[in-house]
Image (tube, rainbow, N blue to C red; front, side):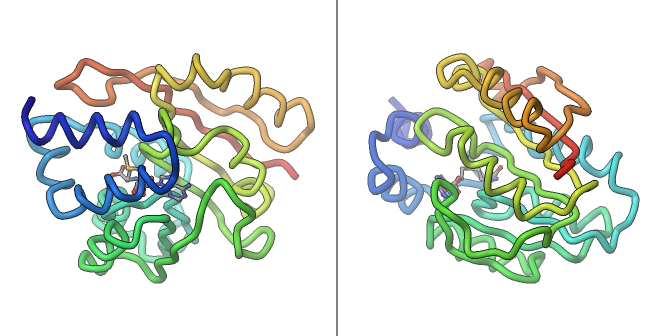
Length: 208
Ligand SMILES: C[S@@+](CC[C@H](N)C(=O)[O-])C[C@H]1O[C@@H](n2cnc3c(N)ncnc32)[C@H](O)[C@@H]1O
């Protein structure tokens, strides 16, 4: 098994946050080269395009939740957006994101816990690659909705395998039934082209 596949398997099969963070700690240095090279990671581009189509104001305050090394922040920055914050739980991934100088602020926070962020702060939240097997589950949207202002949007990917296993459809719909957000768009697109995996890309508008 090559090194790239071995570390990706560690990330997808981690059974605790400690194991997951250890794997990202070991991958941080090579992450961008691996994913944007042969692995064909198209999800950041697809998701940021969908978000920016609905967010014409480039002064908008955007949170990149699970920002990793900053691939998404970099794409938003290139499109002229400057008010971008990033949040992740891996110190090594955050250190790589800092090197890109595209975020106003970078914080180490755990998306499975209450966030140390005030209500209604962001115009938009984007999260790519974070709602996946063994990472962060749908419960985290409770907090992401809370920190997004009404009328703002949340755009994210869910790896297809996790979508089924973690019953995302029903759990995301429950937030809609409770009047927290409204679905604007749901697509299925390529995720990692090399492995042939697909993901859902969702766009919700926060209502309360
Ligand atoms: C596949 S990477 C995606 C990074 C980046 N968004 C991208 O598209 O390249 C998943 C990221 O989620 C972060 N992550 C996993 N569990 C987390 C948690 N509980 N809280 C915050 N970040 C988490 C990892 O540290 C990692 O940087």
